[in-house]
Length: 231
Image (cartoon, rainbow, N blue to C red; front, side, top):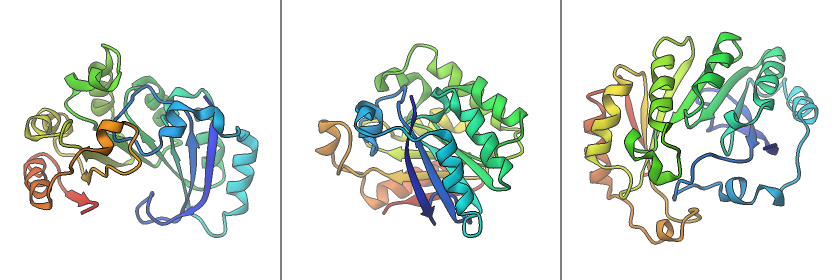
């Protein structure tokens, strides 16, 4: 694993903030709709970026940005994550982590050290279906531990679900809902077939807008706010 990507400015990835983006390679899932397949399957095609270089690049932008998003791939797989988050927080910036939630011990360490201001967790499908994405047998338990940990965490929190029809339907929303009961925000994202990791996903038909809205109505029984993105 390594840092493989850096984007100086984003207005979209950290809501309400101008942020830089840092991308780690590698992932413990193989989501068919993944839009960063190079970072997941062939990370060697990208040069490594040293941690010190990333911190320096961010420091140069402090007059313009006010946050940094650490994403991937799956950043919690890399032992550099804690050091990077600590260094970025030391620059006086807000730090947001994008994660699949399968490493609760890593997340707990980051929270205990107070280096995270926001966390976005991608909820892929019903926890018991995670083996369909290449996860191990303990993935459902790990995800549930993460969600329980975040219930009381002093961070801005967002859950996100990409609604690929083969993976997310009413039954999956019903399975996830009680685990995020009372969460501030649950975002349902429209599945986009183009550039997906799996050839089968690239030929899949997305939900119609009205079907996405039906899932949003269902999710609203569990979350304080539900947003639908990508329609």
